[in-house]
Length: 194
Picture 1 (cartoon, rainbow, N blue to C red):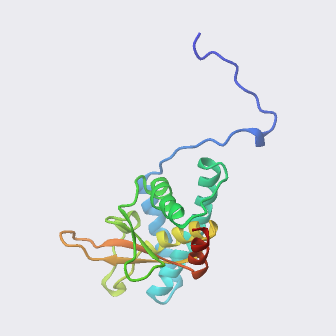
Picture 2: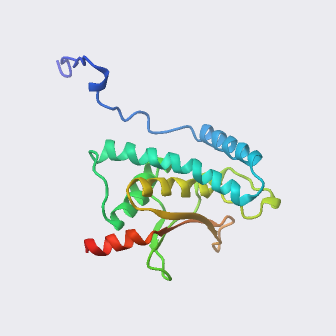
Picture 3: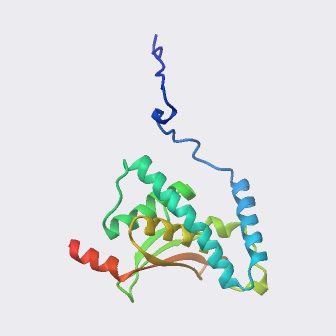
């Protein structure tokens, strides 16, 4: 019979292979939990900048864990050592795991050598959040900026990561750009590696 083989028995739970698990989370469950995260943090702060910083800190913890999981699961505990490699990893692999698709674009900044941008037309964390007029430019993309910073810091690429709205013609909602400004040490290391 096809498929009638022995089932491998494991004497220790630590010997069991990690399963990939279910890859999807209910969108409504995520929207509800994220909305609660934003509302809770909103009650703890006095201004928008502090709220965005708290969301970024929450995202940082997620990013550090995502890096560990993906490096262990997909790369056999190997990590990227080059700048373009880690940016490509974030733009494609990390984005696909978190949002189900590759980010819309990855671009190098034209004004500064140390800046890169990941752009998304309709970022999931901004999709279900309505911002009151008194909160002005509040951007929930700070959570995703924190995730990106957590991944980059964990991989040894320290950077300042911020989220910005960029107005686009023909779209009722501005696109979100995650701006990554790498530390000088990263650029020096990249220059040494050639």
